Image (cartoon, rainbow, N blue to C red; front, side, top):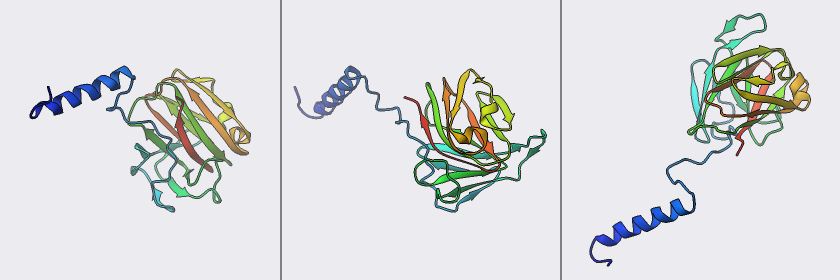
Length: 189
């Protein structure tokens, strides 16, 4: 039965059969939290720069001020939590007059949880092509782009740390602010 090169074929068939019986798909990358630990501390990004973290691509995009005008002149800065705290783990991504678009390697079916630190200025949030520009996350509508939006903690009203929860299928997202930082952008499993 296992003569010559045929044993390799049988091993492959057995391995694939086991994966499908156990419900595993080895071709799909695992969803990880984007925790901003991959870039070096102090890394600065401006429009149109990108970097990768935890398998996701993070791009710097223009930011909309509260008066409706757009600026491409902000910056994203990777810093430790002592500089801007979002309540997350390790390094944070500080956003000053800029949006961070986060593209995961696979679809986000159930939503995201994001640690935030909001300390002043307005915020932008785009989900599935629908852009919102509000004074704080507490002012966001309950649904954006077909995704439920909720926020808990003082950071939701511009006074410190909070958790932004986005429930539903997310095909595209960016988030930004002025005196603002994020960490642990985690898929809801």
